Image (cartoon, rainbow, N blue to C red; front, side, top):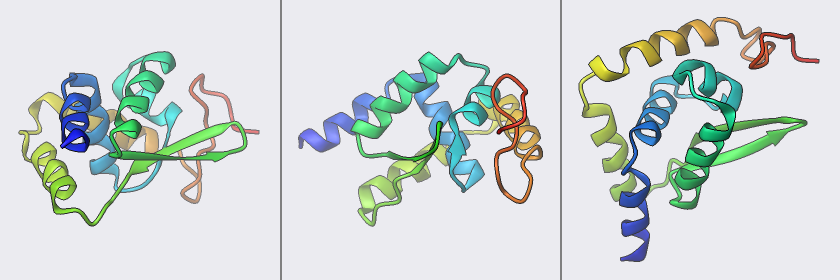
Length: 124
């Protein structure tokens, strides 16, 4: 029961729902800088919210040098799949700007790789 309560607690914040939605929309792992640019939220806040999603088991991370990438934890458990479906069933209107910024940000990738950091510099 505690697992399910933690999942519901992690979903009790609008920014965390927005993070899940863009991860679902993207369908690929995103660098924290891409999430920041898509949501227009500072890195500290994004990291704090992602930590909650990660602790609930909804999101997982991968480090690549000084970059951290996040993706959905696509478990086989039906409950988690239903949570993701519920987030996708929310009408697009509140997420429209986030999704547009995400698409624009992903267009900056070269060969599916992040080449621009959060401050607009080229990745070393």
